[in-house]
Image (cartoon, rainbow, N blue to C red; front, side, top):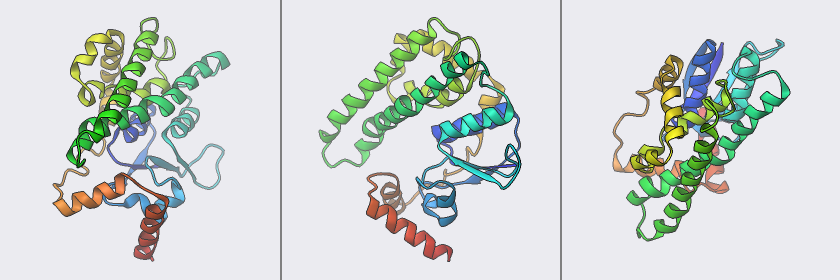
Length: 254
């Protein structure tokens, strides 16, 4: 059994989709990132970066004690090896997949997260809207560039890493399918090959079921005070703030 420490976000969906695709049994362990669960002592032993997703495999490859893994890219590589699915064995094809996995982790995910923050979320919390202009232009522009990178790749390949569906597609789709919603639906007109791929992946039953995992989590309407506390947890973290949150969680769990 695999414990999936999770909240329904694009990064969380990467792993829930992979588990559904692989048919591996798993147990959902909600991590309320707006409520501070990521700072609990138990979770920090699994994910020292206080970020979800993370997994604990109680039946790891090779046997022995349970193994915990954090960072979605590492998790998908592990699950691909464990299941023998969605990762080629031939070195040339394998690294064709891995380069796109690392591309997503270093580029698309962080840039889309920042674009969404400045364009959509920041406008609700900034004292001066002009403060958002540079950040919005910078990160929306980078999402535009990265969309072009994917569109070019998909103009000559059915999937991101070639002719076969792989963890490169699984790790990238949860962010890519949100491009129109986050930025502008008209963007799809510029990237027909990317849109074709987004729709193709979305047709997969395991993608749809993985996307629905935990869909009701976090739907409770927050008070103004709770929303303020949530923002403090999610944004503008510093070492001092993280340390204080960890210490508070440790005392609560004592």
